[in-house]
Length: 501
View 1 (cartoon, one colour):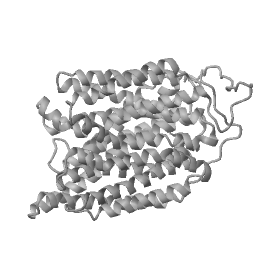
View 2 (tube, rainbow, N blue to C red; view 1 turned 90 degrees about the horizontal axis):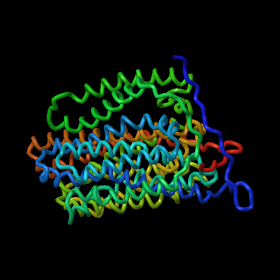
View 3 (cartoon, helix red, strand yellow; view 1 turned 60 degrees about the vertical axis):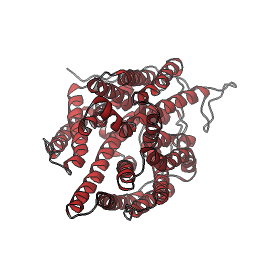
View 4 (cartoon, rainbow, N blue to C red; view 1 turned 90 degrees about the vertical axis):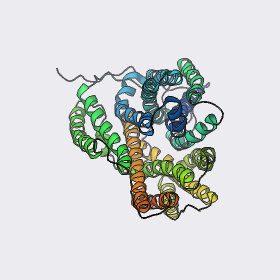
């Protein structure tokens, strides 16, 4: 069958003000403002939900009569689903448009939330989490692509700063929100409280979300979808299993799915480069031909690795080494999560003024310093010190993510925004799995060795956590060097925001 050339809908004229003039270069139209506000709120809810299971696992095990290894599949299956679907979101956004992609994402998320809240057993709960993840996977690339499409370049950093609230603060706040709910209600209410919010967002989206970019009508390549599922699913599953493998031998070595994932990833890359010649790639890898995109994404991936690694280790350290309650643990990491989110718009405004490098280099350096200080923690370390270090870590991440998101996507032509957003989402999942695997594997190996030598469980765990942060510090030093390569990308001449239609 000959290749199908993409077609697009008829372009629309720019919005005008009441006086009939084009919108100002530093302002959003009311219609576009409503679209971005809805997308931000919806994305915050669905991403927040991703990390709520970490605190809810214990009551789930008791209520459903399952083991910890079985219950962990509620998180693993969520990550696997995300890793499989996100590479296809570039195609989905171009094919369905803004409105279609939003309604699909929130319908899936709402259906999965309802199924999880009412599930009679573990099997249905797992299915609900998978359906939830299917909607979540679409939302973040949709948000980033829409902002890059409709926001004037002069204020793009300021608006992109709000993504930090979603991408960084929401995962950090998930365990805290879950802990507050579980302090007085059952685990089902972790889903029950979210459901009406999701349904309200779906209804508002039906009324207000419009298409803001032209659609394409390329055909889906089934082979690319299959290769993406095997490649990224294998990598995320294998990396997620490395931490558990450090404690005891699993039925299948994690290196098997990792090896399969790497091999199939090579086939996926070859297939996408072939299809890109006729603009039919599932994930257009031409985004990596932009030096600015590749450098920014590399630093961002290292930052995600550090963030997710610390998110998994700090609660373990605070509860098992320092003996704190889950709610107290959540409250210690809460200020850092809030700081990261609230600083996003401010950092975005600074980006519009000074560009990325004056923000990224100090931010990466602050993260490296915080990780280096975490190497000195012990079982008798003051909780206030942990809180302070976590806030320094969060401050550094806040100064990293917004400039890197904006710089990466601004390095691309508008027709590649959706594929760039999909690449960023995929990198986030891989970095999260790799960070968790590296931190947990190092911690576990060191803790087991010290326990065998007679150390108490608390001391062994604390020393293992310190060693894990040594590795994290070393990797962040690489990111510090890369940060000097970040450049500001000038806006294209005549670039302006389109109207929703």
